[in-house]
Image 1 (tube, rainbow, N blue to C red):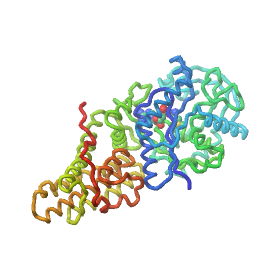
Image 2: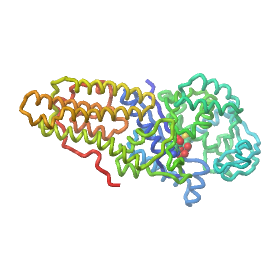
Image 3: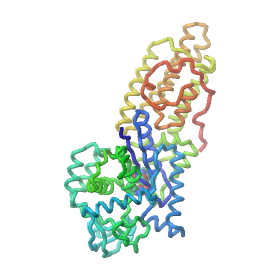
Image 4: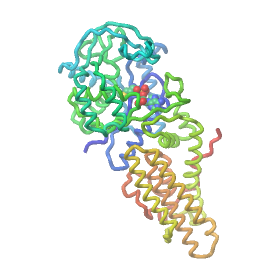
Length: 509
Ligand code: MSP
């Protein structure tokens, strides 16, 4: 059976990871873990984009070899994945031989088929963007700041026949409205395609850029970064080898909105089509994390070290926050206040409190063992009905990338469990001699325990460590598959619960 294959963008090796990079990995990880819990075999790839002018320049500035700079940045990015509990199956670096070999193979294939040709090119070149720009890119007669220094140059280069595929690309995008999520982004791509496509210049003379993959048919040139970077999605899974179909075509390319057009929605499908390969099944395009109204990025100077947050509050808290806060497709402003508010209100007060109340009462009123539920009155029925609605809504939202809405619904259910405890008041009934009150205490504990068990199972893809911890405290095993573990039942009967712990300690800011 084919694996469910998901990829993230590969990050530029010209700076340290920030919240934007971390978010994309967490998002992809939540998709991967959700699929695994639903019984899919997943292949999850992420990696590092190491070539290009910016890396060459940064290395020069620091007085080190580009490879040495990339190695140290790769350590930072892989360290981030480890610290955020990202369950990627592979990590590809574009300086690896396995990648370079495939880039050269594709370039040679396309060259042999006449899809790549050499021509003289005269035009304006943006050093910062490493691309040729046109008069029409000017704003009020000036080159926008984004391009940095723009100079006129003439040089011989190699070009890829993008323009031949324009009509085909438009048909493909129109034929499959689901391929890009959110769907409104397809319109942006089609808008871009209203103007005729130019062929893509895919080479850089070595005098201008050394740090790249050499063209197999002309050693005087290296290939343009996008032609190198995009190929990671197939080089890492063994393009040209038997097992390639096990993963390809990709189910979701997970990327930020800045790199959809033209790279992922124009260059990439055309490269695949020209190489005779199946097209991606989906793109999941997220918005930006902003800080003080600006996109968080190395160049804006507004960055936030995700690992500082994860160290202070725990990786799972970080994961919860970004998934709860961002609506896929839209931008989100990061603020420390919002982070602290969600931490305190939702994680510490709603979830953490419920866990400690349950453990405390089970130890005091039931010798540390989850009792049997024997009563089924309106409060219990309500909790069960809420569970059924929550479960259905959560799964449905997660299947259409509405992670924030799914989590919102789950936390409503968790608050409902706290309210249920408030209604049953086992701490008062435990003092009574009436046997029917004892049954109510047992039932209340059993219902709270079961509700918590199910909540922890649903939370697993977002908060894998905390969920396992909660399940362990409840005397249950960690949740490896959703299946029937999401059915309301009595699976905790007699389970020995753990000692009371504080899962989300109060943070002094
Ligand atoms: N190297 C290219 C991608 C090549 S993919 C074949 C690149 N690298 S990047 O480091 O600039 O960005 C990597 C990913 O992080 C992109 O998907 C980008 O959209 C995402 N983010 C970078 N800054 C971001 C935010 N401030 N917010 C959310 N994600 C953003 O582009």
